[in-house]
Image (cartoon, rainbow, N blue to C red; front, top):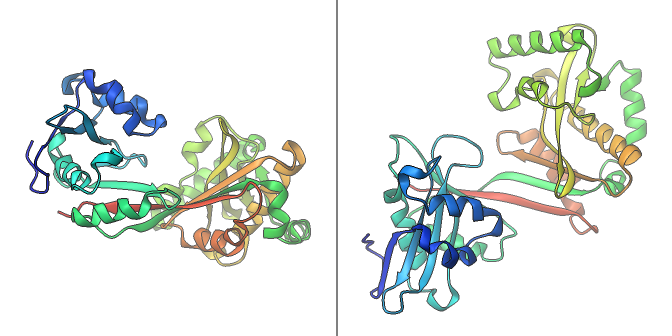
Amino acid sequence: MSCPSLSPGFQIRPAVPADLSACLPLTFRALSSLLETACLPERERPFPCAAAIAGHTASGQCAGLLLLGPPLNREPGLQVHSLMVRTAFRRQGLGRALLEAAPTLLPMQPGWPLRTEWSDRLPARQAFAATLAAAGWSPPHASLLRIQGPVRHTPLMIPRREAMLARANRNGITLTPWTELTAQDRADLATACDRWDAAGDLPDWADPRPALTAAPSPYALLLRTGAGADGIGGWITCLHHTSPQRWLFPLGWVRPDLTGKGILMLTLADVTLRLHREQGPDAIAAFETSYDTPDMWALLERHFAPHAHLDGMIIDRLMSSQRRA
């Protein structure tokens, strides 16, 4: 496998099963299963993935590794999940050469993008971004904002939340856990979603109906402003992760006429208060939002991000870059 930027004395080739033990130290532990699959012969892989090795021809040592597989967001295309070069072999163009080899590792469907994502907390983030730029990839942009921390800190981020919730209740706004939805609630939600679909007001990513078919969470909430389908105002979904122990809220949406009126903040106030009361002050709430949801992004940046210094708070932005055609 030849690459224009590859330094003399190195060769790039696809990984094989015998390479697995040498490659494991060159990627994240969480990706070991993907690496094992990527080392299999192509016809034995259950999904599109591949690994490429930059080998030092004189010693036979594995100098670098690129791991390629399906995107985490399940969209069409392929994703570079990790790229690493051993310290002794850095600054010789191996990272760039591995990136240039990526499109040749697997058959690419017409129009398939090749992308990569990484946290802005990654220690080598600047070097990685420089390698992508040298290989002709697009400038990085923030695609996902992730914030998590113990709910005991929430009163600093949402002052007077109890008063806010009481006022909303007096104004006829209710928040009902997914586990307590009635048959009529579900029917009203389905009707409202059908209407918004037809009007083009409900993005695909915001559709709550798949969440209704999964195991319901008491911290997923349906917001109502009144009776019937017209009273469905929005929702927030929840996933409980046992390792690490946390409650993730990946989706919050309100109908178009309610945007900019503090409704999203109301849902966060309600759900963090429920967690505090039922799971304790150290319960971890995690919120994430993409660039497709500018209102939620702005809310988290304005009210939560300034408290990144508090004990137990973790805030990062997922950066994204794509290979230019």
